[in-house]
Image 1 (cartoon, rainbow, N blue to C red):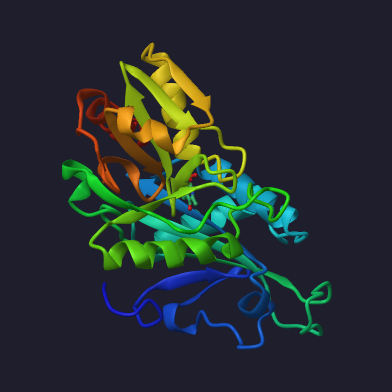
Image 2: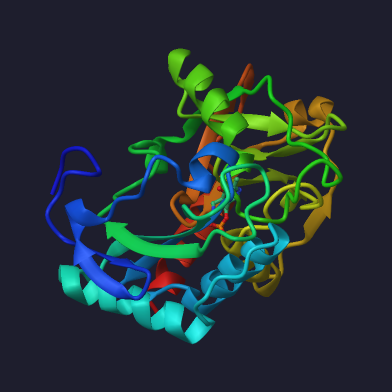
Length: 289
Ligand code: PMP
């Protein structure tokens, strides 16, 4: 399966029924397309089981609530839909994308109360998000855009609008030959990458930014739990840019990224060290357990 994402064979679950891939379309006067009234999830199915599927479905509904939207499907219905979509496409290992949005309706201004909230669940086969960086270590640019204050935007939501600056940052990074960009937050602290959380190692201890203005990723939470079980001290705290120089190892976490080592951020270099490789291997084992 390859080619443009709107021109493939397969099935997509949409608003309660399975439709042909190419028929999973929306109208141009869709509220979400104009005003970013959209939330989504990225999940991975391993050996027929979606890792933390229920947690992702709960987060989807929670993200919608933060945008004043109610998804007209329960967590149980969303779970069933995801597995039905996987079955319809014959996949046991795939990336799953659920997306909920304000559709077309009687409103076309900013207010959208009269427009239906819609839900679609698609999937595709997706290998390593950062390609061979998975083994060699990703090279990251430093983004010029900052993660906004939670008083500016609902930063705990996995909402489309929050990704505008991510796409711009990632394009700038790729133009410099980097895989991604690390973003600072509105206060100047280290925040995360454009679609993944970040961890650092120094003197055998782990430091990761406090998730107080960006997505507290499910992979991030899983990895913190794993580290604590291994007896590794984890500091969730504000990290200053000046500290980057002193860190020895670095990795990214995310559903798509899984655990990806980082070799470079701007002018700072990191080794793909033992703890990074250990965490990546443990995560890989866990998702297939
Ligand atoms: N931050 C951003 C901006 C993301 O898009 C993602 C991917 N969903 C993450 C962090 C990691 O979240 P998770 O581990 O829940 O996939």
